[in-house]
Length: 43
Image (cartoon, rainbow, N blue to C red):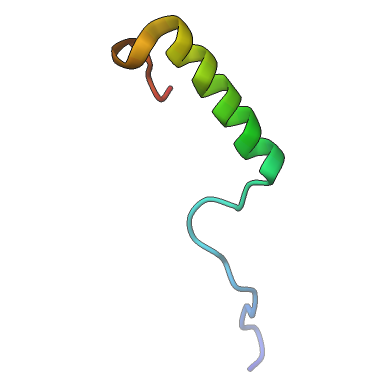
């Protein structure tokens, strides 16, 4: 049909690569090591 947008928009986060996951885990380990469980935050 004329004028319809046929692109599909995905919802949610875009997939992250393995390098992103590794960087997040390394950063989390550092924060938990310095601040402990109670002192660590998501942000």
